[in-house]
Amino acid sequence: MAMEGTRRADVRPGISVMVELTEDKRTGRLTGGRVKEVLTSSPTHPHGIKVLLENGQVGRIKQII
Image (cartoon, helix red, strand yellow):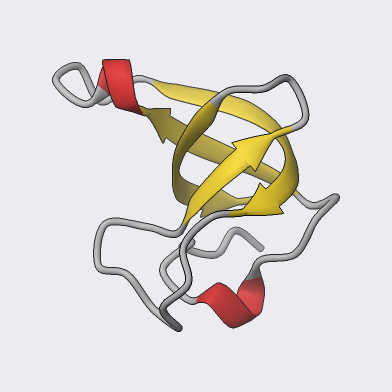
């Protein structure tokens, strides 16, 4: 079951996610990875919770897998 990544409570380090990287905002291309750190401090965000992936990339979660 895939979930949207707009709630911070659903996100924790180690989960697999699909994120939209900052440089891919115009294209909407998604990149897969594992969460290393949660960067958004608010409990929710309409565009997705911003995270740092284990590979060093930063993006907003579009899907939790």
